[in-house]
Image (cartoon, rainbow, N blue to C red; front, side, top):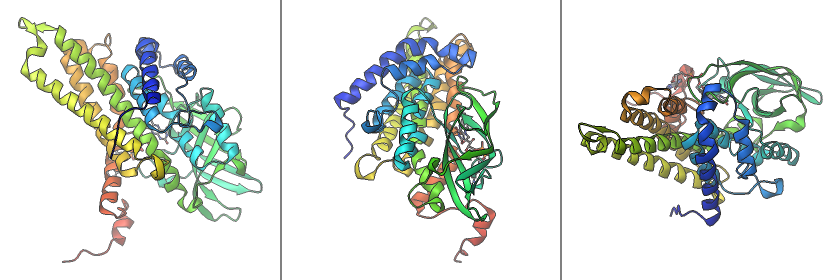
Length: 405
Ligand SMILES: Cc1cc2nc3c(=O)[nH]c(=O)nc-3n(C[C@H](O)[C@H](O)[C@H](O)COP(=O)(O)OP(=O)(O)OC[C@H]3O[C@@H](n4cnc5c(N)ncnc54)[C@H](O)[C@@H]3O)c2cc1C
């Protein structure tokens, strides 16, 4: 049985987030987009309101809540400002979730202290030649005595140059050169020599968060900063990606918030704008558009919440991988449709940079790409549904058993 009744604490968190989002966060959203500047002021507001690190255990200074709490915050933020919605994701899920699940006491303390003081950790997986095929990454961590030495290059790293804590995925090699698998390594910008921020991407939307190249140039990391999931490096990538199920629910929720924000603007405009002597909301063509938009938003929210609570209790600490992937696909595709439909309701005004519709539509375009594309997530979902691994390489297909006549 799934019960979505919010606890008084969850309702309080949502109301706090709503007040903040509809006040100062909404007021700054256009400027964040225009200036392409990271909104440190908004981070300070989130921090002061106790909305960072909501799932960090109380022993480490967090609120010790389950993942639905940040989901509520993320939707509220994204309704007003997609960039702040994304910050709410990455200060509550993703890297911090992986570290809290698999980290040593020292690693958890480092990560919790940074996040609770306002740092949005960066998660470094994607490389120029290893995007969807993430396990083909070439960044390597070579064991040399009492150190790992990292070399390689990542790109499209959210928060490059503003994030302090970095969780870096790399192939791990022993002293004798034998490969162990993929592991995670923690490094802190300005404290770990060899961690270099490269060029920034000029992005279509979500312009207040830098997406940059990150290079590792003989970057030395103490073994104490290696994040070793249970099962060791051989299962390292799979285990680290488990933590990403939380991030997927978070990313889908930003898409949901953007759609819900655009819908609200569209609804209000349809009631006010008059053509042919009556409000455009009186035309059935637009009524059906609004009904479809509303229905899809409600469905996405239900799906995301269902995925979020699937990680509670004995099934935790991360959301169910199939539900998380499917909810993200649905919400991200829905957000593209709904934000464009909302823009349409405004006619020419929707196309103007004087109104937020074009920004919201640009921001929403990202979520079928980052964090696993809609295509790769469908393949992943199919593999779960069919109970088979579905190799995407030619070699994988060659190894598949011959089909029966
Ligand atoms: C705004 C933004 C922020 C990001 N932040 C981060 C971050 O913080 N950290 C990080 O590590 N990465 C980040 N990424 C990178 C993101 O995870 C990758 O872009 C994504 O995994 C896809 O990789 P790619 O861009 O190289 O596309 P490609 O892998 O080159 O894919 C190109 C197209 O082919 C499709 N495709 C590829 N293989 C298949 C297949 N087998 N079957 C069907 N279709 C296929 C893809 O779906 C896509 O449509 C971010 C990306 C964006 C846009």
